[in-house]
Amino acid sequence: MLFCSDSILRHASSDFKQMGQRIFVFIVGGATRSELRVCHKLTTKLKREVILGSSSLDDPPRFITKMKLLTANELSLDDLQI
Image 1 (tube, one colour):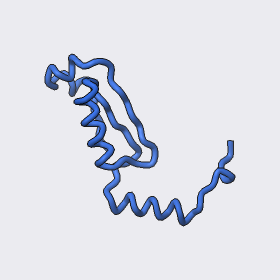
Image 2: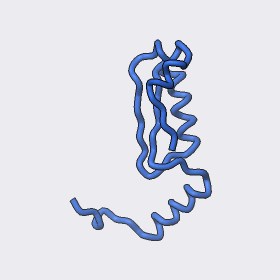
Image 3: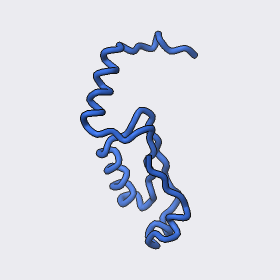
Image 4: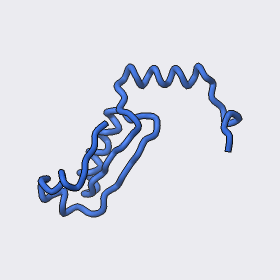
């Protein structure tokens, strides 16, 4: 898992320091590289730093395995306890 803190940003370019408030996105269950790329593109487009966090960073084979497990377990809302 990657971590970043303000101490690292002190050495970043002034472009990031001049941006507005940060947008934090957290994906439970894992993020993919394409989602990471979208956050990077949004940083440029919105002129705001978009920070992606997740429980894991999945490569394509791992993502497919997780999808198979979801369908194999046939999850339903009936299984949720609130």
